[in-house]
Amino acid sequence: MRPLAILGGTFDPIHVAHLAVAWEAAELLDAEVRLMPASVPPHRPPPIADATARVAMLRAALRGQDRLGLDTRELARGGPSYTIDTLEELRAEEGERPIVLLLGADAFAGLPGWHRWRALFEAAHIGVLSRPGSVREWPVELADAVATRQVTDPRQLRGQPSGKVIELDVTPLEISATRIRDLLAAGREPRYLLPQGLFDDPALLAPYRQPSLQAREP
Ligand code: ATP
Image (cartoon, rainbow, N blue to C red; front, side):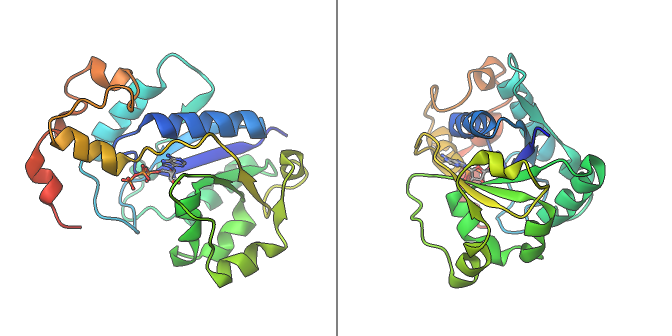
């Protein structure tokens, strides 16, 4: 069965590296990939753009292609959006279909801080996306949990619904939403770091163009 892969994130804002790594993951895994914006990320300072604005940016970014989809279920749910709850909901919908949680290498290294993190392996496979600036150094408990789960061939994800970990060697793009927020707040125009669609409507990037927001404490 063709896997379903999920790239969650704050997407504050979505940038071209998100699109590029999601696209490459879709190719490498031959999977349906959905971007899934988080409403109240438990691990992070609040986003600058609200949920509606981030979805509007995602829609603008995804226009014109049909390989990458959008899933806004976490925004519909009130309260903190825990990934494990989302994956368990998806599991109930998808039956035995392989589900792959895509995580940048930085996010993966922080996994032991997540709510019920060990249960994530029961609900999905994990695809770790290489990310420049993120050294491949996992905390001991994570390395232990992963040791028996690692596979290198994407076909090995198809035989079972969850439980494997695969490292996906995607094109290194040293782009972050933090950098883009800083550029926008400084009055810069990061034209080729963001999807073109974000510039088509001036309202989309307006939340980031106010320098005072950058001073906000987490
Ligand atoms: P911020 O700078 O605000 O932390 P970000 O650029 O990391 O944002 P997120 O929305 O937090 O963007 O990222 C969503 C997911 O995409 C995370 O799993 C993250 O690791 C991954 N990701 C983001 N940018 C890249 C990149 N350049 N290469 C690989 N993975 C990435």
